[in-house]
Length: 172
Image (cartoon, rainbow, N blue to C red; front, side, top):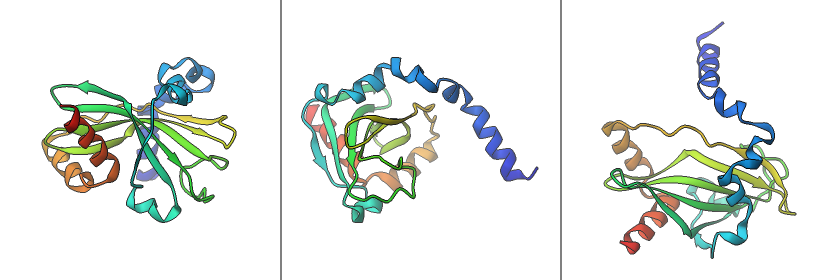
């Protein structure tokens, strides 16, 4: 067995409790229930798409009423966002029949500003608002100071982090 396979197996074992939760268990998850009920999220605020996907014609938004302080000391917030897909390309992680995805994501808005997208819970929907898939939540990262600075440098100017942190600054 080569090193790449060993690393993949270790990664799968590390998140195996997440996969064990799969199946119908997500139906009782309050975060998934909130993401499914678009009417309870308040008014959407349009934001610019991620630069890597801007050419796809995606429409991105956040729901300001869902902004919550998650960790006061670290200035970490959660918020619901949504992507309405402009392209039919499903070569990435997107489900084949997905029209849009709604997600609860984690955003750092202190000295270091970035979205911790790997910690998101995402629900993908078809054009008739039926759930196609649920991904996450995944364990949060514990960042070293060096990793925080690097994440900030790489991601500070991305639209979602900018919009959420601007919203946080306005609410202060």
